[in-house]
Image 1 (cartoon, rainbow, N blue to C red):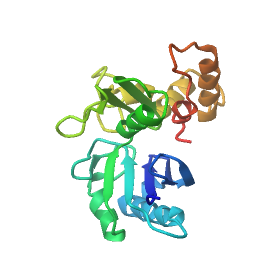
Image 2 (image 1 turned 180 degrees about the horizontal axis):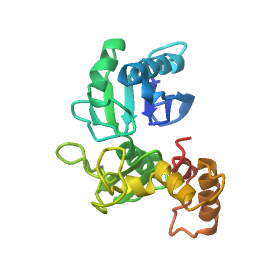
Image 3 (image 1 turned 90 degrees about the horizontal axis):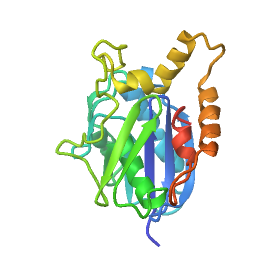
Image 4 (image 1 turned 90 degrees about the vertical axis):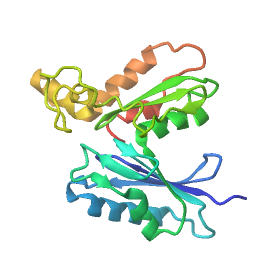
Length: 236
């Protein structure tokens, strides 16, 4: 039997570590707070600890894969900039993990790899072309074209969160004005709800709303509402 793989999902609010078999079966999973305000060193120390926590009691792992918010360079394993992770400018994630673990290390944009996972294991199975959108602390997208993940020359294809909708719009965490994320990210949705004087609004209220909405919707073909898509709103 082939050795399992460890996957890390790094978000602005939470990070998760999972031990998976090569066919995608989840064997072990943990989650913890990212503590992003501590900066890259604090976060990467927590990532390394999470990897050790899910490491198999017996046997080995064949590789470690880490997904992170972008923009990032998947070819070099460098997070170029992560607006929801303070201080994350050109952080060499792959090299940092390689110093800790003598295993092949792969790094990719979270939305891109979520799109790939849906294509291979989820609601996108059987479709050659799909667009995956994720709404969490940030907003991201991934594109499957002719059955393959579309990356672009720098790995930035599908990076929709920081497309500018209105140059005079609200300021985004990246420093620009009017980005899609400044309108549709969970932080922005909460801010806009409070500005509209909706009392005691919390992220979980949005989760309940979208879950109820998904139950009322009709989806074509074999598509169906997927709880992960909804839960990404809060990063849970």
